[in-house]
Length: 140
Image (cartoon, rainbow, N blue to C red):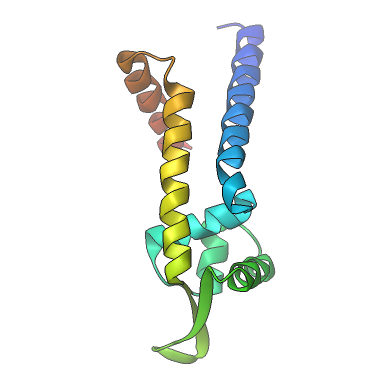
């Protein structure tokens, strides 16, 4: 492979990544959530109650930023803070019933957007792309 091929591959990868991010952002529009709030809902839905610091680690953001994310989720009645039963000094962030419902709706909308995005690929191409992406993810 030539250097120009590498650059073309990188440019193509970023272009596809941008398109997928835009579709994901569009999928969140009905709920008026930013991508960061959508990711936070997804993490809490997938992993359950957690301390804000653990949420920050999952989101790869500063703990102070996680506090702001939790504040926003709480203001929207999507999450609550509760005392951690194992440590009274700590709090756990938990999804409200509305947060669970919205998270499930977002998951379905993202899945549908992803299906539409990859629909132009044959089943074999999709399987090969998934294999290659997993390899890149796992080797990183």
